[in-house]
Length: 253
Image (cartoon, rainbow, N blue to C red; front, top):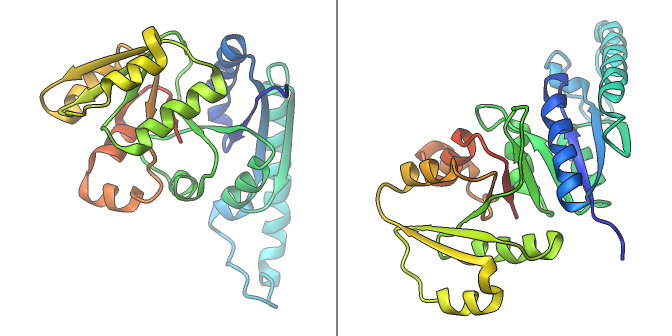
C-alpha cells in the first residue's frame, strides 16, 4: 500500500516554523510523508505589469525582474535549509502560486498551508479550486493531534469530511459537535463507527459556542467552503468567521 503524502505549501519565510512543527507531529501521529513546495512567484511583489499575449513586460522592468528572481532564489535556498531536516523533499517551481500549487497537488493526498489573520487572495482562490483535502494552520509553534472535533451542521459536506478523514488517516475517536442542529442520523453513524463517534449537542449562539468548544481540541474538521468564500466574507457568515478567528488547525474537504 502506498504511503500517504502531504504537500506543504510555503509562501513566506515566516510560515516555516509552523509548517515544520506541524510536519513533525503529523508524521509521528499518522506516518504521513511531508514534502515542501515554494513557488517563485515574482508577481506577488505587485510591481510588474501583467503581460498581454504577445507582449512582454517593458524593458524598464527587466532589471527589476532579474533582481526579484534572484531574491526568490535566495529565499528558497534559505527555506530549504530550514525545512530539509523534517521534509523528505523541498523543491521550488516558477509561476503563479495557486496555479502551480494545484498542479503539483495532483501528486499528493492533501495540501497543508498557513493562514494569516484574514482570508488572503491565495487562500481564497485555493478554497475555490481545491480538489483534495486541505489543512489550514494558524501561524503558531505548538501542535498536537490527540483530540479531534468535527463541526457538523447536519449537511452532506460534514458527512463527507468525516468519511474522507477516516479514509486517509484511519478510524479513530472523533467528537462531533452540533450546535442548534436537530438531525436523526445519530444512531446510524454511531452504529457505523461505534465508540469512535461521540456526538455532542449544544445550544446557543452558534459562532461563540463553536469558538469556545473548539478550544478543547487540537484539530477541527469542517465542511466545504469552496463556493461561499466571497459571499461569507461580505455577509459575515459562519464558515469564514471560524476560518479567520480560530487558532487551531482546520481540516477541510
